[in-house]
Length: 339
Image (tube, rainbow, N blue to C red; front, side):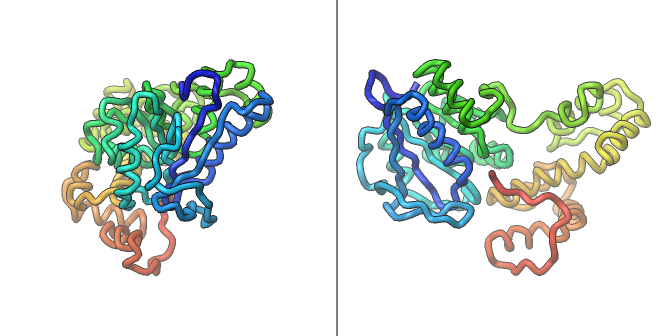
């Protein structure tokens, strides 16, 4: 739990450029509602930035803060880094130092959305279980191989609280409120937010395939799970068929009926999606990305990537860095962006 005793719990939210508004507001509104439904000041909060100046979130709105990272803790019982888009490009030594200075046994350090990347960069997640927005899972695991990064909705490991983006902070902070102030307060917050239930940390971030296609197709779900677990060394269709106990033809029929794709194409798109995440969220060489996603060579990877996204990987990275005009037309693949 955050804080101790009967005094109000003080929380600092450290805002970084392009932070996710929905993730930030999900966190802070849960604390506000805890005060409202209880009729007491259970939580207080302050906003912090690297230099004390307003921070622009990912939707372009600037948010004023209360202090800069050059000031001391100010009595915070918990500090949460609010991350968002392009977190891997952020250079913020002042913020990293401030977070390290506040690494104390009685202070909870946490993150919402992609804020875990900053804590990891400050070496404040070593030895802890953590999570991050699902679009950044692959790149975070590549960048910080020493960490245990789970795909769960949130993780509360001793004095480290991390969660995914979107509305996941509501669930994490409601669990904190429930543990500290009782289930009745958390239930009343849930009713105010019109939340059907408070998800726990065993919930996954993404909707399981079985919920999208129905529980009646366990063989198809098993095949997709095998694909997702074997990106670097792709399995053949014969191997997939053998492991799920179906013939090639039966497996192809299932993919066509429920996913409108043949298995090989679906598998390729999974690998290309992983490659795009690594391309845009890390500085890994393209040849290393190709090998990490199961392609036999960089040229083969580049051809497949261009066929899917209408732009070669090198130009995709240059465009993301603002070095190339977006004159290639819309990409045919899915566009990523943290909630």
